[in-house]
Amino acid sequence: MRSKSIDFTGINSAAVAALPAILRRWLPDGRIEGGEYVALNPTRPDKKRGSFKISVRGGRAGRWSDFATGDSGGDVISLAAYLFNLSQGQAARRIAGMLGVREERNQ
Image 1 (tube, helix red, strand yellow):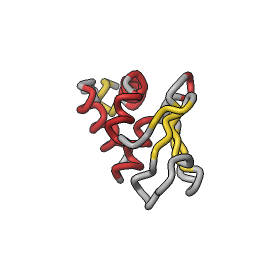
Image 2 (image 1 turned 90 degrees about the horizontal axis):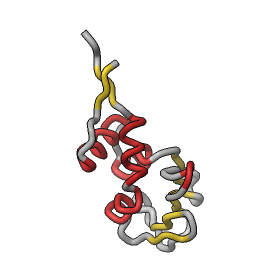
Image 3 (image 1 turned 180 degrees about the vertical axis):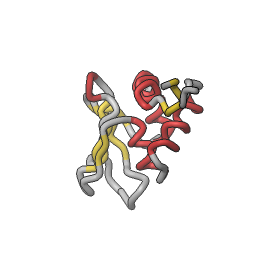
């Protein structure tokens, strides 16, 4: 009997492919500046865009940072976990459902 585990890599790859649309949905006040999506951070009383950024291009796509607080992460799943106060697994499953991709892989 094989167990199943969350396909974090596959889910994150699908999320990166849809990243601009995902960011507009999650952070509608943001805009692309250069290779980054710059938005207000909804987890704190942020009043000015500039410190909360998500990379949208190249090999860094999905990496994010709030330079005002030091919070950061390396992929879209960690961003969802941060924004919506979820575990990594919960965030991955939510993204998989949103994108209509498989959430598990066989081991």
